[in-house]
Length: 458
Ligand code: GLU
Image (cartoon, rainbow, N blue to C red; front, top):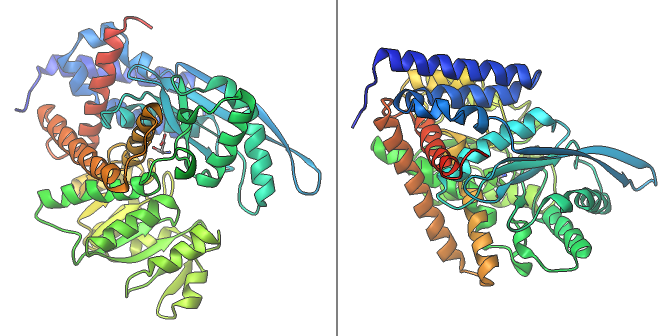
């Protein structure tokens, strides 16, 4: 049922949202990524505040957009030449209304307060959408893992955890991976946590190796989950992965398993990329080669073309969106797909876009897709599979059991289908049928809001 609200209710809700947005910008100057995430979320919530004027009185938006806590800390470590290096570490504990703070750690030179806060804000609503009992947090460091030796990575992780350990715990805050933090880094972080605490508290981190408490299918979860979500979008329009050309940006964990599932479903993945450039293989990307270069060797995607002469390598990443395809999966990083990219994709006949990365499309690009009737799966819904399986890892750790790959993958599939259904329903109920950006923000917000209200003013 589509609800309509009086014009005055909508005008009051808009004025409230604008006011709070202005104060977010004033209070967090120069944090453009955080502003961008807030802008998208706030705009979506206007119909909610029109329907529930009492939510304004409760200051729900003011509370939602102010993190409960944020720490920054010095990370000093010794490089292979014996020189001491210093980086800055972050952890934002954004919202614990529905469970312990939960969200990844990103190691990348671009990491700063704005990036960590945009990711943390998104994470609150994403985690709510999973239906699992997890609040939202995020963290990381401006450390560049590129070119570092294995021992340097280990020493950095140990120093990072030596400060972080006092802020986290299985029932308080549970970090995991993100860009630059995979199974190897989680292992070093966990080893140091255990050494400091003198106890095996496996539930303090997720994304662990299954050898010591990790969940099967966690590695695949974000990419597989994204494809399960897009599959539902495609079905709604009588389309399918089978026979479609797919462009996937990135070649990290999310991209690799999005490609794997898309190929399993009969699609041809024609391109993928890394931070230096992209490869175009019209015959279809050979995933084993990508895995060998990226997972085993930590090499560059350019090496692919040397082994596959029919493929071409192009320097620079933006051009990947000029390749004709029916399905685009941006799985690399924030703001990697802008308005011009969206226009090129639309001109080339793209039918669906599923965001595997966090906030990969600019606000203008999203507007273009919506205006052109392209099916659009926003990040906080489409990439929620990773953190959903992290919650399943926490459940297994608490029960001291480990489930089979099939069991976890089956649950992931059901969770992604439920997220799709919830987003679709909320979009419709609040007057924006088919707009999954609005649907995801509203559906995620309503649960957090309900939990916040039930727990009083905190
Ligand atoms: N970094 C991932 C995300 O953006 C996963 C977080 C987690 O598993 O806690 O959702």
